[in-house]
Length: 289
Image 1 (cartoon, rainbow, N blue to C red):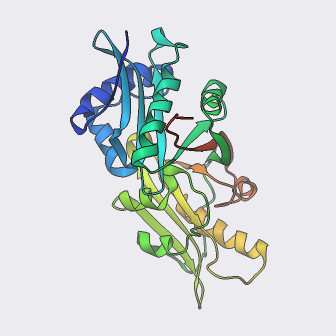
Image 2: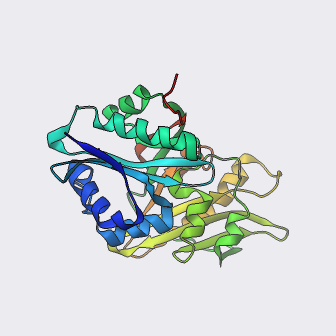
């Protein structure tokens, strides 16, 4: 008989092992998760051990769900089932148990960012009441952009200068949320395009040399109305182009919404759309009619 339990802060190594056995095993492009990497996710993404749950059988993990918790909502960060224990109701039980707990302790809103090429995962969340809310997409540069020449007013700034330009009404993926940016502030650099009177456009990015990648993690357009749409897009393109000048690093824009930066504009700059995601949400329920 499987045994289910919520986890504690001293379960970090156990959770890393459970994720490797139940989640990472399903993805050929995923690297094994160490306790150190899991601790980094705790710091940067606000993963909470008490919002994680595992099922074991004969002492071995057979299912796991990890949750990242912030003031307004909890993200279902990962959910996985051991290959030998699929289609036995474990995933649904984990999601419903976490929902019951959060209906009492809060926050009562749960979200999940589900890849659109994983129909089984989408069906799982829909089966327990999650509703589609927002769409995100990954973008990458297939070839390097031409270097910026003669671009006046582009300067490097700290995180806060660009954060102040971001529209707080825009729905952002968890890894692009303001809290994540703050948690990663020591890794992030910023560029802005300035005119004589204001900041016109800004970009935040971080380098991941071990993965050979530069990630653009935030994009900001004009601070105030004025000027045409084409002019505004050109300003953002200028600062994005400056951020793409990364020697030996590929450039990606992970999980960006069309509201943060129009996908058509990114494609016009030379970016290619990759994997897409749907953000699902539900209010926690006690399960009591």
